[in-house]
Image (cartoon, rainbow, N blue to C red):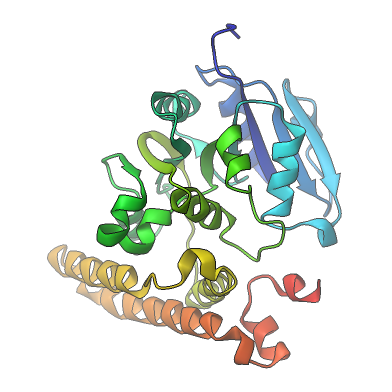
Length: 308
């Protein structure tokens, strides 16, 4: 690495990683912009692939399941690193090319007030049709830098950021308080909200592309949205007074119109069902404090969170 280059490390929490994880690490090692260390924080459960542990630049730490937290575990990775910029990824995201890290770093270097930059997520080849459209809606072709001034126009989307692949400047990360040390979900948006409310900016970088998508069932969408709403309810300093339902309604309307236009009207019932699951999960998550403990655990994607 040249002395004038910004130092960059990568942090990846893992849990029962599959063969895709090896591809991810290999792609990171092939990045044009040099990476210092790839810190993997693995939650113990079965065998961890030895071939990954032996890869160049990789440093693996193992933690117990009870120790894992979406915010605290990632903050642990930040503290392990000494780099000026730390990129966080999930184990199921694979860089689309060798320029992902460089494109994220470039945007952070261009403006000293930009504290975070996240990548565009492209649908995998096995992704279902509706989810492919959702990916395009949430991750459009045009980049954008978001600040406090965008709240009126963009609402909750101003705070959107995804640790599927996101880079953070250490100095602004620390000034904004870092990832909250106990959170069920959404640690990326909570931190982005703190950054924006403190006067910093968050960048969406469409040129930095990773392949990442899920084929969630309706019930999986329900559990996921329940946890998302819980995270919002637990952080009123970020989310109070900012509606997120409007964005969901806009997505459903645009997806339905797209299905009709593409003569795939037979998919509309599935869209309605999945959207209903998302909405009910979200509404229940918002009022989780009024629900019995057993119901909360059943609704949640992370029942262990409620045992802490």
